[in-house]
Each structure stands twice: as structure tokens, then as C-alpha cells.
Image (cartoon, rainbow, N blue to C red):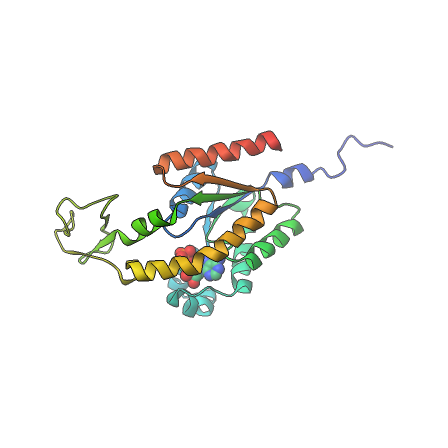
Length: 237
Ligand code: AMP
């Protein structure tokens, strides 16, 4: 007897799950774009850094496990990160997909994500690389100035200069540069973070799911370019 159903009626649906990986150097605007895409595509924005910070502030057991890494800026061991992402992707709001921000950070994590998704009959739908030249990254990262009275008042010497040089527009207090925004620190952060990022880019390029867009345009244009890149997947699918 022949069935009218395809061999696996869920296969098509599973393939539609839109797991999108955001890739970008510090200062590339990846987090901003992740948020904008999440809103545009109605998918949850899953930032591992944010999940860890919430766990730390909520004093849950995960917070105790990751505190020493997150507070020192060291990478949390892969097994812990992979577990928290698996739990997050199992939540009902991620059934249709998610925008992953800050994960994977290593090829080991990328492979673990592939395996986790393969077990659920799916795969990474797209890896989006927000590409910004390293001299512009330096300018963006070292230009930040923060108010000494309220660290929520943030300026940038080029992109968002205060009306009066060195003074906060909101409360008039002096602005300062954070230690980790100083050129030497930024350079060493980039030197440690860029090589693993390039490995991840290669990983997704080999899988044929990598899409690169220029990250040096205004944020709205970058979002449009990313959405346009995603729209081409439909055609190819
Ligand atoms: P972020 O906000 O993405 O800079 O993340 C803040 C901190 O969380 C990092 O400095 C790491 O300690 C930890 N973290 C976030 N994502 C990961 C990841 N994919 N792998 C390892 N550690 C991570």
C-alpha cells in the first residue's frame, strides 16, 4: 500500500528551524545586529554572555560554576557552555529557531552545536559574519568614554561625541576611558579573539552556510544586508 505522506513528514519542518549564528570581532556591532535580527525575524536572541551574567546575578548553581571565568574574562569550559545552549534551545520559544550571539566561540563548540542540532534532525541555517576592518575595530573600541557619575552614560569620541569635550551631556561629570578600552588592552583582546573567530568562519564556509556582510555601514544598512543575505537561502533551498 502506498502512503501519500513523504517518508519523513517532519523532515521538511525540522530543516526550517532557523538557527542563526552571529560572528563578529569585538566592536563589529554583532550584538546590536543580533538584537535587530531577532526582532525582525521574531526569534529569540540567545547571548551566552547574557545567560551567564543572569546566572551570576540570580545566584543559581550555574552562576557558581561560571563565576570565576566570566569575572576574569576567561572562556567558560566548552562542556558547560554547550549544556547551557542546549537547555536554552530546548525552550519552546526557540522551536522555530534562535539568533546565537557569542556562541560558538571555539571550533569545539561549533562541532558540539552541529552534533546537538543533528540529533534534533536539523543544522545551522546560516552563519552571519559582520565584517569590520581591524583598524576600524580599534577606533570603535578605544573611542568609548564613560561618565564618572553614571556608567550608563556612554559616549564615543567619533560616533557619539559629547557636546562638551570630555564631559557628560546628561550630568556634566567628567568622562573616562575604561582600562580594557585602552589601545594596548584592546590590541591584545583582538589578538586572542580573532584567530578562533577565523577558524569558526572557515568551519561554516566549509559547510556552505556562511554569509558575510560589511559591518562598517550604518546599523540599519547592515541589518538590511543581513536580511537580504538570509533571503537568498530561500532561493537556494
Ligand atoms: P560576552 O558578553 O559575550 O563578552 O561574554 C561574557 C563572558 O561570558 C565571556 O568573557 C566568557 O567568560 C563567557 N562566555 C560567553 N560566551 C562564551 C562562550 N561561547 N564560550 C566560553 N565562554 C563564554
